[in-house]
Image (cartoon, rainbow, N blue to C red; front, side, top):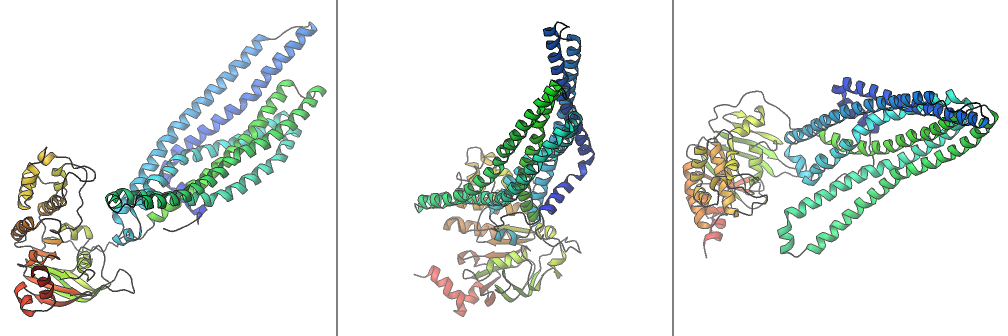
Length: 591
């Protein structure tokens, strides 16, 4: 995992985040207007409230002097005005919150959809380099960070800026000299915020990366808990996990400390300003230069003046965290996708397959397939045999275009497969892997995954051909039995039979079996082999097998070594040669 400690392109990521909000620009304009009016009506309140204080103060003095009393009618009118101001402010703020919540959820929905869609367009090689936990962290943690902070940052930044400008205007209208004194303290707030922001940015980025490591570790532990228990490695897993958690905790502690320290520091600066204004303002009241209500309003504005600055500093800290998360998402979205090279439509496949001088390596300096050539006619049953690492599965991956060849070409019915779209190509293949993949749903829906339009009768017929119908009907709910998350309610052999039935239901023109019978017992293996003979009749078939009993009837058996064909022929021909294949076969069956 790349260990980027900070966002490498802060401005670029912010611009990209804003660009994603472009479809909602009209709503954002309305939100901005609501934010402005909400703040304006709020900041007018203290000045009007100061008038009420002045009215009460002067009324009390008149009553003491015996010249009059409190003008309750004037006081009542002032309080009505204040109530209206705050109600109107609430309405604008309420509208702003509703609109921003809708925009935020639509934006996040589109972002999640874009990330998930990107997964389907990425080449297999990307997932060879990344763990599932890292990708899951993007969808869960990083997008959640944006979800949590986007609406706050987008609306509160506007509110804070308007509040600062508005409060400054109200303060200046009361007493310009005191306003200048307040402004002297402002640079200290800005400098402090800038320093803390710069310090916290790389910790927020590291925090997200550490969290991805935690998720990756948890996923691996959950998937391999049986192996962990079998080897009694619980203590090692716990120790390794604690180290990762300690690293994540360290970044969380530092980022939260720096983000949290802004508010008390800004409050301290605000209190200093409050004390200075209270002393000088009190002297002005004594001299008759200000009213009691004005000094009360000014003190309220003084306290509120640093509050939006403090909030803005805190928001900027969250912006740093959000940008760090967005950078990881944007880097994922910018990953190179599978090239779409479709020029002709693949229809009416006959099943003639030819490898011409194919070369391939997962790394540029390490070739796995070397100058490989093979011509397979329609309906042939070809078995691929060889030691582990000889390139058997790699050939199948090239045929399915999970990877593209480094040199040479693969032809389907005489046409280079690079001219077909991958979707078109794979639609004509049926594939059964050594590792089964089934999801938590009914058995019927798992089988129908091979052909979404298949009716129940077709599903049952496919199960019968794969010899799975008998054990399915013995299950509590038959074909409607729900497979649990870890598929522990089925044996490995039964799961493999289901994947074979799924491939049968697809009714492919080309069939690929990669150790498809490796998880079944010998008797079931024999039955499946017979069923497969019927299934593969008239279809081009590629069978990768270590257990050679399953390929005796193959039309052609090729033996690979270091990505090259070292021997080829039928089962009887290769045994008579008494070479590589014969040695492998005899090692399995002769005592």
